[in-house]
Length: 60
Image 1 (tube, helix red, strand yellow):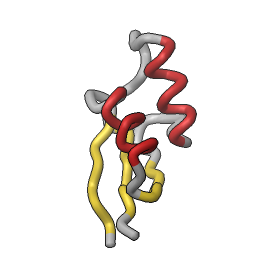
Image 2 (cartoon, helix red, strand yellow):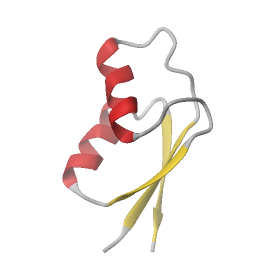
Image 3 (spheres, one colour):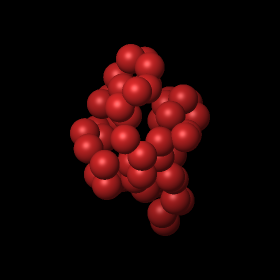
């Protein structure tokens, strides 16, 4: 199964509480953090919510 490499590239300061909670749920705590998650609809939806704060790459 494919995986997603999610990197936080912008700070969450000034963002909505929902966006902060979503970043925390993804495992991102600070600027520059990187996590690798399975490519599932649940994670795609979370990434869509905070798409302005993260970058996503597909990893095989």
